[in-house]
Length: 267
Image (tube, rainbow, N blue to C red):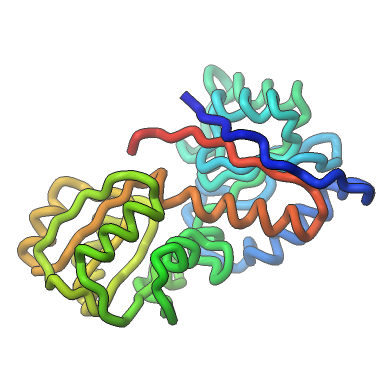
């Protein structure tokens, strides 16, 4: 079930509402949509256009019929998501896809998706935002994929117990801890989402504590063999940060209110 938080108190804006094209063009440049490699099915950028105006921005981790329905209830006309409509690849427009497209068209909802460009953005990205929430300083890019680093490396000194406590607070939830590394974390790697399968490559970069969202079963065994800490905060929970930060940034830039549509998957 999607959870809609209490509506934030918004200032009534007197400026003319921006055109969708202006918001999209700015966001494409801000996130470097055309420069950053990604899986083809991510289809970063504007996936569905509306009639051309933006009066309320909605932010969600995933697009789904539930999310679109909640967006319509809130009168959102620009929905920003991390995982867009076309992850299954080329497909016939029927069933769930037909339902989602029809709902968006009938309710004039534009859809903008940003995957890796949002994960790795130095200001509003999932990795940067989670690092900041943990109070970790001076992050450095690491772990190359699709032609660019997709994670952040943080050096310092923090006890494993304190890191787990901060992570639980930042994610507002539990963390699965595989404590096979040092009690004092000195090289922390953060890659939000489902990066657990990269644990061997992470270890090769001398990371002693790896923070991500989810991992395959064998990654827990690998953590023990490699002698590193593996902290799993949940795929969804580690990726709420980027869409929130991006929506807040656009809200300020274009003087348009925004809301977060919280629809956790449980993963």
